[in-house]
Length: 340
Image 1 (spheres, rainbow, N blue to C red):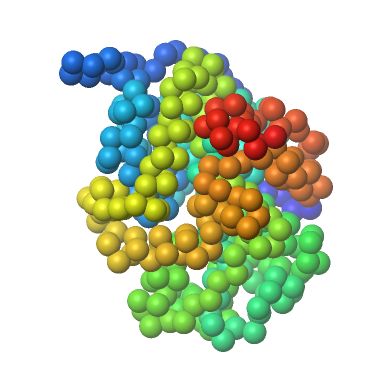
Image 2: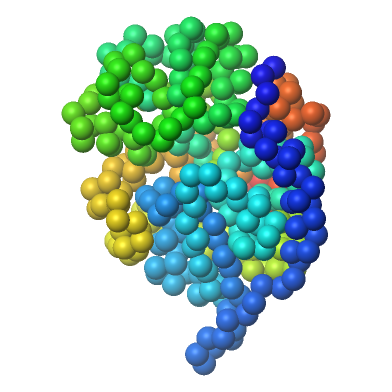
């Protein structure tokens, strides 16, 4: 089993993170509202710059769903190289987004983070290929090279499940190599890179990574300490965020789109529309109703399956109880009933 760069980085950060988290249980500041009860301040960290994949959170902010829930939410953009666990440890953010497999690995490192909700049923990550590439399935990738984020867990999963000799080079977040080489394959978001390839005259095709069987949720998480001190605020944040996602995907997304474009000059109405269409087409946010999935659903069984996969791959040292890294009682009641 190869060494994971992310795993090594987490191991190196562990003492500092634990020390920082030990002092992060102080109450979030209350923000006075004019003629109303004070609002609880929440600093929410995204995984990238403002974009369509964050649309539900911006919709909740733009339409006042957070304020109606008693929260004053500040959405703090991410970017390349941002280490959210460190930001949480230093008290710079309160709640953040990630993949559920990341949180399981954090639990394996004894970091006190906890999943409190899911906002995407399936990860939009995929492999980006040229349309005339002969590879049509994961099994066709033997002896191929993929440009991907160093240490991604799905790479080990693909090697093990499909018995692949799969080589990799570090992701550089660009498309120059892909556009110049018809045999090139790289990690992408279904909602992002194909748009730019087409804009530049290319003919992309994607293979959605969740179709391989490696299928993490996109989740909302916080620290155990913050959750203990602000349980109702976290519960309110989850409910308001899911309300925002429902409104963004099924209502008028204009408020969120305007806020995203104002905060990220590289965004456009056309690009966000592409992202939204990709999320619908690939059932990213709400999942597949035929399989019983719905917006915000996360189940104990699917979390347990992910734990078992990561343990079999030796990405985590041993099986971890789901209760160590996930809470289901913070979901809206109709989702909590089906979580178990």
